[in-house]
Length: 483
Image (cartoon, rainbow, N blue to C red; front, side, top):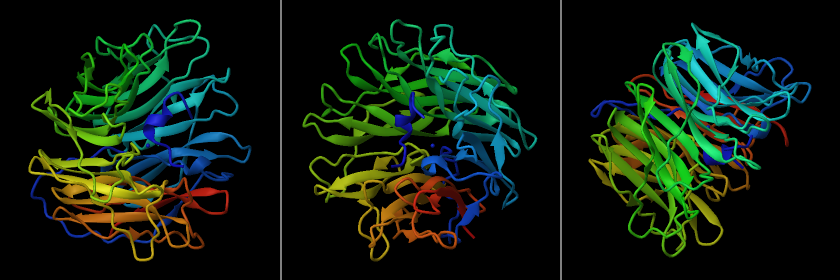
């Protein structure tokens, strides 16, 4: 099934929301037929259909990334570049010096500070078989060799498991990224969070995230996403408290200096053991952001929440009101690839998945309008659809203007095959989803495929990327845009 970004920690996801002014004009996007994403010579497909990363410097100038399997069955890093609306030849990323013969290099996230100046992050295997973090930069349109992230001083030296999960750039050569690593505690290292900063084109060593005072000795810290605006950044995720409870985490940074993390104040009906996690974050200014995630309530039900930062102060989280047909335990779920977008302060759109009855999974949308979160609504599927399915629902959301957005999703059709879907929001109302026309010969995106990345611009086209089943066992990538 599709990998939730939170599940990437110490194992092995989309560009964050673009900020657009309120009141920008919008017309309903018309989506074209998907095109095959070219792979390097000798490639045999995408492992598990994984093409999670998409970043765009401007309309028609984007980079997508993930991994591919070469003719030797080795996993290699993959970047696809769109230049002035045309997807060019694919790029095989060169793993850092000291990588394994099968580097297992995988891109998790891409961000672009300017056209031809992007950054990709993820993980790879070193020559001892341990997972290490990497960053790699595109300089004037040319991707450089990936470099290993220098971990904090307390990192485990011999048997490391580290990974960079997300990156965001506010200008060319100025970016920040978040990830996880093992410290040197014996006999088993503790999972810690880290931040890495790029300043004027140079990446510094990673810094350990300062967790709230109640953090457990083994905090199982996880940073899912980061977004930066004008040098101020917000990272979100989770950590284990002193009594072993999993709490939502927000970390603020500015110009490379990071404050101690904050515990999310959950809704009043949260369980004493809330199993909370912050999945997504979007900012419309350096000090006005919105995040969303999940928690367990006092009845043991998995619910969604939203939390708002207003003028640099994070408020108490609000429980989501799910659609009226939701099961008593809706099992609210977010994939973590960019399912939240905010066009202006108090105007956001988001989506995920929930349970109806006992076995029917559906997608949902939830909108904030003029500062008030509305009840969630079910994603409307094309005629003949069975349901969104356990591997379906809303994955990615991006907005042209307040109340005018597009979403990438997947659903189970009447033949019990998963299909890719795009859904348009017009004036705060989500329309019936449109099945993406896959490349010739393709009949399904499979359980691991569908839309992973989607970016819309105030003017110009929307761009989406994802994967589909070429054969019964082989995944290929696709790109699709609006006209």
